[in-house]
Length: 170
Ligand SMILES: O=P(O)(O)OC[C@H]1O[C@H](OP(=O)(O)OP(=O)(O)O)[C@H](O)[C@@H]1O
Ligand SMILES: Nc1ncnc2[nH]cnc12
Image 1 (cartoon, rainbow, N blue to C red):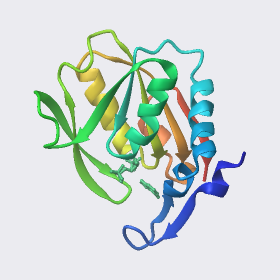
Image 2: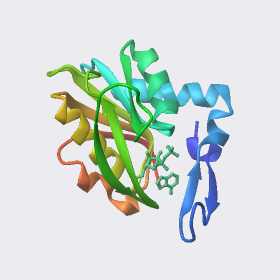
Image 3: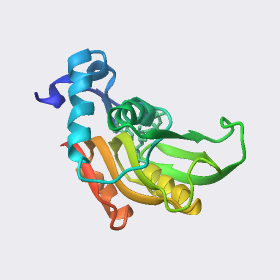
């Protein structure tokens, strides 16, 4: 199955010059959505994983079903102001702007092994910040899994020695 056939590219969204990779057309198709989650599960099958962490919002679309497939818990990393409990927060830059992410302080116990999941790796700003938040809680990041990697933005170089898995690259 060629996942690229199901991803729609929208030029100049959300700002001129960005070629937006729209996954709504992929997740609209049940068998293809399931095949993506199966492929990610297989890609990380050799890892010991206690928790999946996914950044809002598209990280939930990939991370929550992957957590169910692996039988782990799921930790939502949310945009600032959305989580009700005590949080740690960090600012970051992404391909088309700036934002602030937060995690509940009690979401990860020291030493727990955490796999990050998201739909897309672009500049790496979102995931570098996600790693930072997990590390602040004492979690150990064992890898990061994506449906899409934008190789031309070299987000990998921001993620240190974290193991990175992506199903397709542009
Ligand atoms: O590697 P980066 O340059 O940081 O970009 C990648 C991030 O950008 C998108 O999220 P976005 O912040 O647009 O939020 P959304 O999931 O709520 O649409 C995408 O889902 C990744 O999380
Ligand atoms: N080009 C892109 N398409 C979809 N989501 C993105 N997040 C960051 N860059 C993106």
